[in-house]
Image (cartoon, rainbow, N blue to C red; front, side, top):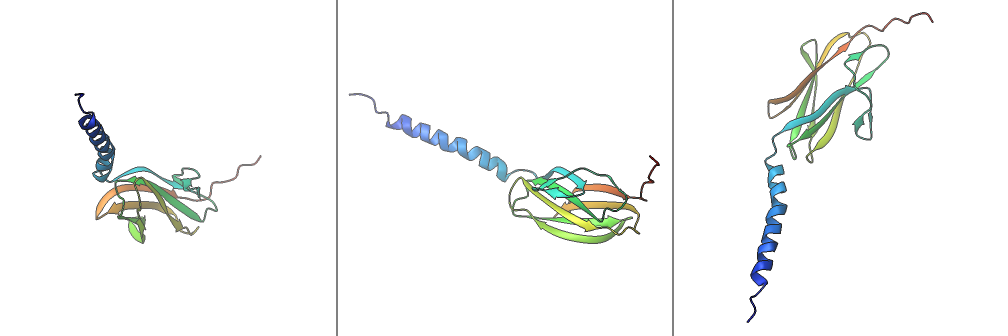
Length: 142
C-alpha cells in the first residue's frame, strides 16, 4: 500500500495560508508614522510639485503634503499656526496605509513671518514643520 499524499498537501496548504497572513498581521500592527512631508506650491497627481521652505512674492496658497502609514481608519489633525498662534485646523481622514493627503492655506501678502504646521493623531504629534513667509525678493537689473 502506497503512503497517502493527502497529509503533505494539507501541510503545504496550511503553510501557504500562514505565509499570506503574516504580512497582513504586520500591517495591522504597523506603528503610526509620517513617511514623507513637505510644503509645496501645488499638488499634481497626488504628489507635491516641489518642496519649499520660504514663501515670497505673489504665491497666494501653500500646501502641506503628507504620506502616512499605520493610520488606516483614523483621522489626522492638521493645525496651521502663524507666529505661534493657531489660525486653522482641519481633520483629514486616512483610508489606507500608506495614504497620501494634504492641507492648504490661503496666504495674505500682508502677513509675514513664521508658519508652522503640526500634524497629530489622538493628541500624539507625528510631525511639525515650519515655513517662512517673507518680503518679495528684489529684482536685479539685467
